[in-house]
Length: 162
Image (tube, rainbow, N blue to C red; front, side, top):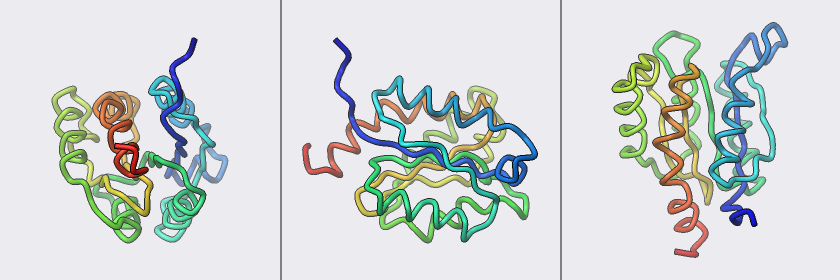
């Protein structure tokens, strides 16, 4: 018998080329698989360009849609097109800097340079946990390994079940 699902999730891939169909999305399926292993139902993968309005719209749609967790991947670095953290900051009601710091520290320790240099944020918008991850496969795998033990606890607190 399968363990019960702990909540609903949405994946947002922030990548200009992927969102315009110029490159295949290989990260969305990986994040989906890792979320499903963590017992979350994944509502879908949304592809958006590195545009603050598009990112905010995707996040707001997820929050209004009632998902428990939104994981964004990409746009967390220091280049001019890396605006995910800036867009996310405008959506968050309450940041959770400890989780973001843990994701950066574990990513850097694992050798995922983009994770260690990430400006990604973690926080709560409404009753939705929002997490920004760096876009490499190593950063995603390590970030999800750091995040998943905490997700059920945060979702329970946000839903008032804890």
